[in-house]
Image 1 (cartoon, rainbow, N blue to C red):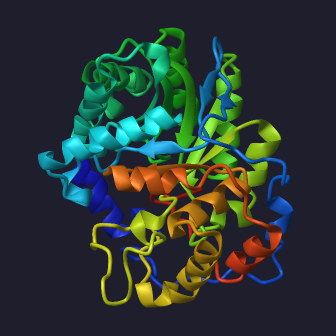
Image 2: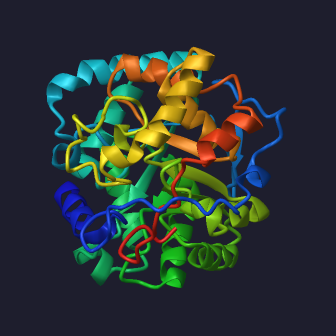
Length: 367
């Protein structure tokens, strides 16, 4: 699975790879991004919680999710088993602080990420953590031969790897499934009604398809809880094209993946030290990102915090729940610095002056 995902991203599932241009598009200066920020009184901490709506039970989640794509994934992240102790330590740092929600997927490490999650959950009470995984939607035998039952069949396999009776959130990983939205909704309803997941959502869905899925799920009295798409100062496409607003109007929580653009918004990389080629989201040449990084670094210096904390706080200010990859205790500590404060409107204005719109692709990043 992991190799299929990486190959697909290289060929154009990522909006900056394959047939797509790697030149960034600045946001139109006339666009009023300040109208989309949350009230200044909204200042989430590591112990603050947000509710995902479910049919039988809701799920309370922190305002930052721990991204587990790199755990066990060699194709994109070049994972080595020697990293596991640092991952376990990072998990303890975050969980102790109040961030106990992990985002994984069947495709991540071809299931190895879910197995690593099982190790992290070992010895914990079930109410001490929240876990979200994603249905591998790429056409395979299960998805083609059993379209309405495929989500449930593959979730059962996930539960075996996770060593759990149920998960909290189950997402459709992207709208490239061979079956219709109505068929997928029927399959997700089976997952909820069988007790294998509390809530369901989608990822990479456009506004139109997200609403279609919500309408189809409503026929089974199941709410669409969330939509996860790429969002950062380097890809404001969901905001500019109305997806964020559509989520707010319908009570759908919007999650951002690649919230730090796979390390590009941390200060780790520059024009002399480019990220690995397998890091394909918002994969613009670092030279093109220098004005953006300069502003983020200036604000970070003024506030005595990290560049990554500023970039994540920007997402939070928009009502976006960031998913952030973690591979070490140091990264965990840096991410925690995003909580407990808010960027001012003037700081957001400075950031948005050097932000990018980003692009969409029908092959994967539709939202």
